[in-house]
Image (spheres, rainbow, N blue to C red):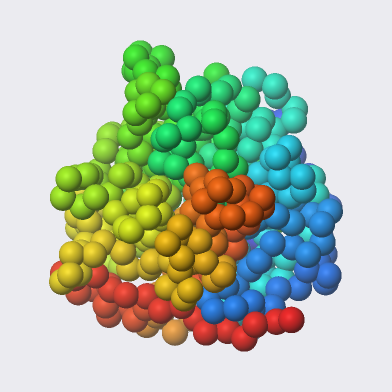
Length: 453
């Protein structure tokens, strides 16, 4: 049974050094503890985050040497209470640097005292990230890119500590390419942050641990490539491959539930992008159960699902925010939908009275026929992450936005920079009471922020 515990900076010797799991990964465990001596690093004063435009709370860094100078996305936001009841917000995100054609996606961190104004943290990995690609093991699943999915504070029977240990659930890609036709890349691209290409990289889900949320060390999973969730050899499909990405973890009284995006590539021209479920007792060993969110293309027009984010409202009440692919006016356009569940295992996609599935859509200001816009999120929105605000009566929905849709070309958008994956992180809010309603679809409103010069 896994239980939630408050954040306390536990000592390294509080780990159960006798457990089989930690004996097996002793070298990596030592790296986690050793990182405490290096300190947390220093805030990046040159990258202090000021709100920029309607809804946008984090833009690419203006410091071109950083890992996130081109794009930021895949937000994961947590709020912790410290001394004197002060609350600190943490934003883990994935970023892309220059030159974006060659740079990997890395994971970074920003901090805030209100969830709106963010200040970047200078990490100890490459280009000031807090987790870089795996350069030590050529055979690993995450040698090409790393993208954060969720962060949880966990304690369990197998990991015993005075406080909790940060678990980072992320997906990584390797150098193995799946040769797919360009016509379906709009469906397969996880978001605008995924660079436009005619090939697709294999992706798997992994875990990293930290005692402070700033310094991370990987934990090798049961699979040969180090992943904690991958296709079992006996279950490999006849097609080109399977992708696992964007894990979202829920803690129940009995177990952990992982909701994630699974893509099955049948051949060069067909693929399915779905939401699946896995369960675990310790956060390290997972059992995959299957698809949990039905997809009816003929009824909804939705081509597939992207990143999910699950919020537990009560013992028998869950909501999932999920990236929707298609179902709107532009091909492969991204929007954000919501599903409801009583147990976290069976889900129903919500709709409003007009039959719309989107609770957050691309910005409507100055939208052109080609789905591009001068608005920073006029091309589409996706990669949602939901958390309760400080007042507990409001839900903050962080998301990734971009001015041009995935799979767009220079000819469609009229400029040579359209394939640059310029993505930003935004924030929309909604009253919590709207999520408790058994039917209908709540509408989120972007936070209104002043534009900086």
